[in-house]
Amino acid sequence: MAVSDELGLTAQPVMTLIRKRNTREDLRSLARLCRRFECSGIVVGNPLHLSGEVSAQAAKIQTFAAELGKVAGLPVRLWDERLTSRAAHEILYAAGKTRQEHKPLVDQVAAVLILQSFLDSNPGSKSEATLRHIPAAGAPDEALD
Image (cartoon, rainbow, N blue to C red; front, top):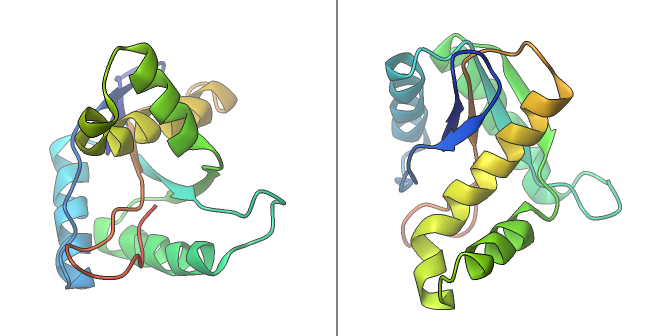
């Protein structure tokens, strides 16, 4: 997860939320974090195919994002997240991190990249939060990028 500064100019990493098996619990946790950081909206990474076509995962994310918007009472924007994980790994390598050190950081770096891309494309957006997909512990990859 990442949040913007109050002016909506820069994105900063916040944390990696470890998903539960209960989607409702995940939604409530995310809504609490949005209130804590006084977010005015939510940007959710949309995992499209490289061709731009909607993937099966993207369809799940769209459903999750709609539910999150209802629970949090905030507008939700889906934002293209293609290649953000790859870019995040490149940034971590450039920072001297070994591959083993990437796991706890890669989702936060990718979330920052997604939110910064949104902020750069939407000047004046304030107090946004962004979310990346993190599978539930021990569960198949299923909802929140």
